[in-house]
Each structure stands twice: as structure tokens, then as C-alpha cells.
Length: 167
Image 1: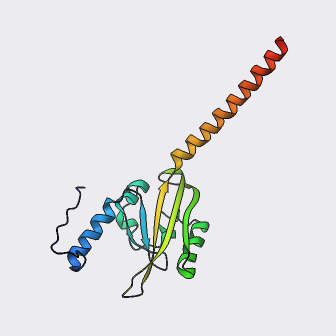
Image 2 (image 1 turned 90 degrees about the vertical axis):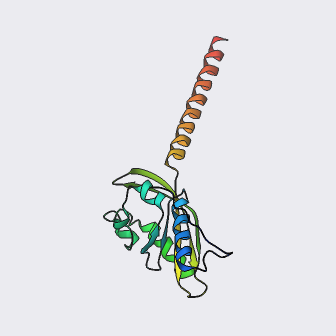
Image 3 (image 1 turned 60 degrees about the horizontal axis):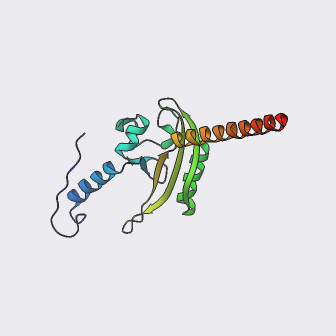
């Protein structure tokens, strides 16, 4: 899909509803990290292009659906549902919440989630912005690093033991 170009005249591109919508869509599609905008019922209002790509989903299978119903219920993660519900009811913030989950389409993933309430000044409407970082590769590297460190420590211990025996 080709990048979207938006042209506007004047200082406020959002003053014109059509231009503002086009600019918003272009920004949503340009952000590299996957994210969702959810309503108070945790229904998907909009998803970024990077979300669809990262999770191998199609717009028609996500847009307008409850988060827990996406992917035949594989996004119905109790801890995630609990924290997201608290954001709108308590006006709280979820920052770097780690979830380990097995997805049917993309397999085992370690996700770092952040979410916050977004309130529209003029209408009082509230939505939740949920950003999703996939740290599966970083977690694997950390595990491998820890394993190598333990092996190194064992080898050093063994070497010291043999040197002491030789002396």
C-alpha cells in the first residue's frame, strides 16, 4: 500500500473535517508500532496498519469488534481485559504491562502493552489508546544471554577446580 499524502491550506489542518480525517488516517498508518483505539466497551474503533501486519489480521475481522472477540477469542486475555476496563472506569494508566501469550496465527509472543484514556474535549467521549510492542526477540536474547553467562560461570568454576587439583 502506498503512503498517503495529505495537503492542506492554512494553519489548522483539522479545521476542515475531510482534511483532518485524511491527516489522522495518514498518521495512524505511519506509526510503526501496532496500536488500537478502543471505545469504553473495548470495541475496536481503529487499528493501525502496523497492528494488522504484526498480528496477521484483516480490517474486516477487527474493526468494530470487541477486543476479546478478535481472532476467535484469542485476544480474550483476562489480565488485559481487567487492566483495560480499569483505565476507563478509574481514569488510570497502564504502562509497559508485559503479557506472554500464544496466538494461533503468529505463535508465542511476549508483548509490552501501554494504554491510556483519551477524552474528547468537546464531546466528552472517551476512548482507550492501546499500544503494543512485541519484545519476543529481546526476551529470547536475554534468555540466551543468561544461559551463556551461566555456562561461562560453570566453565570458570570447573577450570579453577582443575587448576587447584593440579597444584
